[in-house]
Image (cartoon, rainbow, N blue to C red; front, side, top):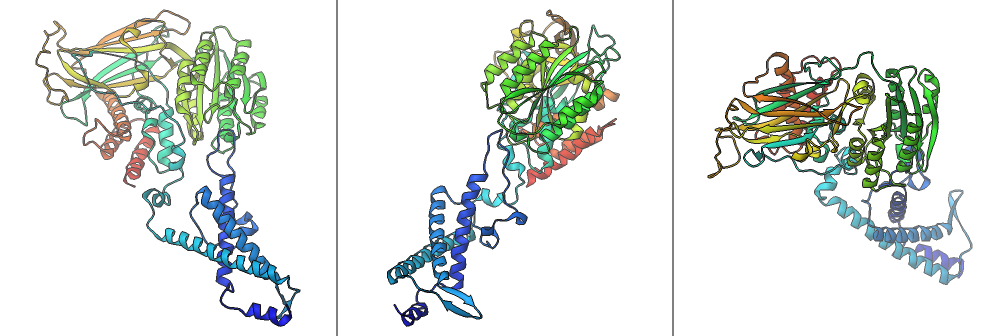
Length: 632
């Protein structure tokens, strides 16, 4: 081929790729490249793998600098098609471009390849450009069409919406309404955990409603301190308060409030042997995870005595001891060990628990506090990962006198159900630390109640009087239900309560004769009235063991029909009702009738009372945020 023939080839117009075609081919190639890179570098990572960052405009790859077209992420099969076609187009365009080199305002023509090669390259270029153009046009058409509901909503949904789907919570049914004639006795274990409240707060602060399974009514209610009468002696570590008031969401029904207040330690705080078991796997590489863990543990030191000891065990791909037992008076050594921690690796949680217990047992303090504090963002995926095995191990170690508390951090792979069960079986509390303020609440303001038990295996049993109550429902405590016969069985484990801690339980009851019941009267269910008990709605029994005892003790009192609260107790009962009603609404409001967030807001606002740390004021704001999130 001579120069004239080559010029004629370049002069052909019917297939010559114009500037727009070249740009489309290049755009498609870049889309394919980014899709493949996104598949490699993003998506759901198992715990122990830190998230990869996508290139930002400041660190954009050469191939992405001029990309202006956005195409929805294609399926794997289509990605290969896009990548192949676009790559062929760019390659052929490269061949085309090598035939022309700008030079001094003109074009220097290089030596052309053989005619057959040129024709093949040209044909492939035209086919690739045409096919790529079809792909791009198809993508543009799809982008112009109304998208399905979820993707369109995704454009306005906060990132927390996606993260919340990866956190795991135990699905439980809301407690049903029961007929007193069929099941007059209700038995459950107390619960002083607060993890549900702080997790709900995190979701609402991010603009989304929490998963319904994440909302546990009792943990929402027990997050707050209530001004119940204080016990006067450690040998009788509880005072009980019972009051009855109208249910705000259903006319004719009553609420029975049971308030239990624990004895507060003064100068008799026992010696402590604490082992901090810290998750330093790769997934903890986030400001609200390991850095917050370090700050939280440093704050805890301020509530310990100089002679108390602290050890640090970490786990990632393997477990290891970072700090042997060190006296709190050597505070800077402990803080320095914390500050050296870095996140990386997978999560050998079970190995870490074993090592932590070994360390706690090796330095056991008789008549003191021996506790492992586990701080983690989620699941264990190395070593023992069977929940039943882990629970059994923790339960056996509990008998040695070493207890386990669990602090949860972060979101996205938080295994709440496992953390709850480990804490329950380890005679400890489960809390969720979402902010430094929450760390201060749990580990500073309420450190004694979080760390120092005053009673264990605390159970509550209420027997309702069929002569005065036709129906009842316990608000919350679904995961703490016990069989009636378990109440007197000292071998059955139950909840533990720390120094100064309070517990609140609320029953909604339907008095006999009220039209507010959900069941039709039974034709043959009439029974003689309980003689002499016509002024009682029921009878409350509380069973517990002192920390160093194996035989339970009993406290009991009647639930009088005229136990109307007044003054401070009325204010506290109303605020607890607002919290419980708010939690019920977050779970769907199955039994809330027409009561709504504005009703909960007004009730909470009117009964905030003394609020030195602003926790109750915060609840008011969360109710407002829930109302907004539900309307979105």
